[in-house]
Image (tube, rainbow, N blue to C red; front, side, top):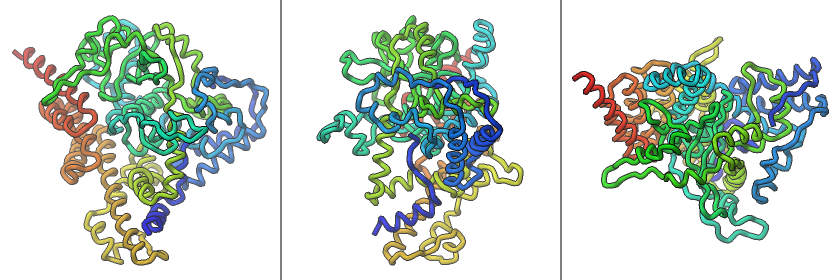
Amino acid sequence: MLLAGSTLLVTMTLAGCDSRPPSGSGRLTTPLTASQRSSIDTAMDYVSRLEDFEPRQGMMQVAYQLNRWLESASDSDSWEPSPLLDDLPSALRGLPPLSRLDKREITLDDVYYLREASWMQSISQWISEMEQLPENDGWLEALERARGEPHSHEVGLAMRLFDWTIQNIQLNPLLDFPQSEGAPPGIDPVYWPLYQARPGPGYRTWPWQTLLFGRGDAWQRARVFAGLARQQQIDVVVLAVQPSDSSDRPRPWLTAALIDDQLYLFDTQLGLPIPGPEPGSIATLEQVRQTPKLLRNLDVRAPHKVLVYPMQADELDRLVVLLDAGPEAFSYRMHRIESHPTSSPPLVLGVQPERLISRLAACGLQRVQLWHTPLETWIYRNTLNRRAEKDPELMMDLMLEEWIFEGDMPLARGRELHLRGRFDQENGRDGAKAQYLRARVPDAKIAQIGKSPKIRQELGIVRGRQNDLQWEVYLQSTEQVLIRAKQNASLWLGLIHFATGRLDDARDWFQIRCLDAHEDGPWTPLARYNLARLYERNNDLAAARDLYLLTARDSPQEHGNLLRARLLRQRMESDSQRKD
């Protein structure tokens, strides 16, 4: 019974959404014909504004136009998959997306990847045009004098991209890898939990889903940060510790932005860059190696316990570099598309591991490998989608947590426009703010859905062939979807106002529509965190500190928020001493 009602609601919510997951750089010299150029131009134009079309049809049009282009393109250009792929475990090397790296046919999975890269480019571009964080101005000026303006500019840009990630992706707990047991013949026991769709660290969503949903664990945040930086030509890698038992998988530590010959350290679990020796500075790996005390400065006392930063000095000698790149980044298809840029700045679709390896070696890091998380995500998401078709409760969970962000509904449209930086009306088309407001159905109407035919008609809720029980479940589920959509829209409206400098409006959305309206709502930690950041921006450091201390109690970002509170206390004490 529940399955029938859920399926109908999913149909209403998604409007035809396909929830399947997405499955080497270089320059080509073969000239394009006018017809070829037209096809790739049309396709990439669609990619850059898919939110203007019916989602499924827009994606199919991208695939069609790119396949027309590939069919008539010359094969005279060389392409080889990266040798790093050979170092993957055999259980991962045999996955379908790696078996089709040389294929010439664009699928919808490829279009999802193109859309993800395009979203990352849009976000990173409008972030790059924002002002630098004021608390780091003095250090960046000193860095510019010491290393030059290009170096300082890239560091400042990496800081803004990281900061956006932390402000916009609410931190979920980082789960342990599930225990493997009872794997059938032919399945590697290590990956059997993923084939059972058991959740674990980093692999529960694709980066494009993490962006849509606005939440993820530390590894998912790392993938978003790396994707944003890639579109700005900044290489971000994951530094991990190789356990003494080499058979165990490396333990990811943090992300590091490789700028010239330095690795600047950003911790997505703390939600903070690692503070360097100078006020407002970001530590480099070189500085941490020279002064391990910088790590111990991150230990902090919480009520009834001490939070010890989970990195020790002796582990710095066992670092391995993990490159975040899904299979598409190594495919012939993305190689060809990236080699014929149709936009400025061009869309970055591939990675160049060999170039990165030589640069990392200059930083004293000799061990480089592909991060397994993108391929683990492929296994998990494919299994999850198949299970949802047979499991009504799982389908309902996915609908409330994920599928309301897909399709042609106001919340989904608003979110896509938000990621594009299209906040206000343009050329007669509504922006993200108008769509979010449309998604905020008044509570009084939501409460009347089960009782008022007039309200149901106004909201477009039509009874099909459901029996009475199915109809009741359908209406109850619709209420849950509308409540969740309203909560999401409220937070994201606050974030838009914050990003555009309308701080009073942002404060009202965070405080009144998020925290006061839903004291223990799904966005309480991120709303409080952003409200604290807003108070910091207004130089109300005491209020900001109080909120960080409060937020630490109900957030996986407890450690980082306590560190922020301590840093603010130190700033307040320093300001007081200067006044005296």
